[in-house]
Length: 401
Image: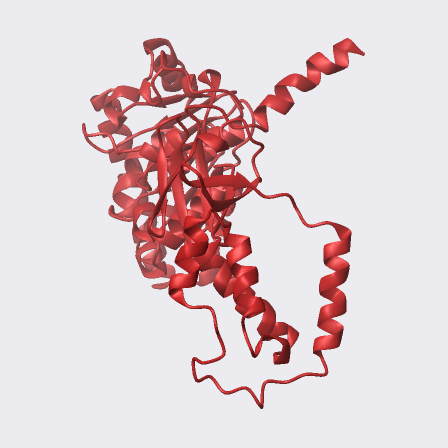
């Protein structure tokens, strides 16, 4: 019995927040999304109130909190989910509300008898947000005349103003991608969550894989690959040139020290010598030129079937896949994205990477792929993403040939 408890403890701990972890705060059902790091001194501004995030430490992910007016100022208190009785009352109210309509209601701003001064006085006396909402409903002359839908709409509007709710969400690949796509899509290259999942599938990202990535999406791709690897294999964030691409988003994932060790950086020149790269690139370009001259005698166009792009599924129009023929605290002692060791680089030079994923909206796909294809092992899959189809199609002929 004690052995089972010991085995469950790490799982239970992974479901709870801790001081220093990153969280995604969903305010008022997606009206506002905020990434925050939980510390005893961190605060969050909701409306015109500054609330401490200390009550969130040690709570399970998925917990719901509400802004209340305490004796020491605004604070976040945990909300208990509704019981079956509350759900039944809502269903009964909805049935009774089907026989009402809003035709006789006139919006002349005279239905509410509770003034702003009265609300301020309730706040000074320590009234909670829910109590203020209930008082507004009780002092509304038209609330009982509204339909059940209008009543819920009225409650929701007042609740967002006087009793905002905060949902504590775990930051992982899907939630991070959805949040950034909603608040700042340009930061991640307008990469949707369905595109991200398709990239991981097309790149054949699995345990013990060595994945080469060109991540110009702020680190979202690197973090998603590392999350799927689960502390096995390596994800190598490479760059064209000497300046590495930023991957600040990786720090939001709350990766353990073991997973952080598997996230490394290496430029193209680090993985293979300049002479090898130039020689293999010249051979690849020469083969492509010979193939193009041969095909020009037969046909001057390439069909969509040859390119293997389909517009029916609605997602593969931006992602190209082809085959190349050949929950713990973040450790302060290990930095995410350290330079790959010489032993690991030597291993990659000999065996190559098992797959490659490119998310580089600011670069030309062919200029990237022609330098990175020789670094893959034989029959290794690779996937390329771009926001626009035309950019991929204009270069896909060279890649396929």
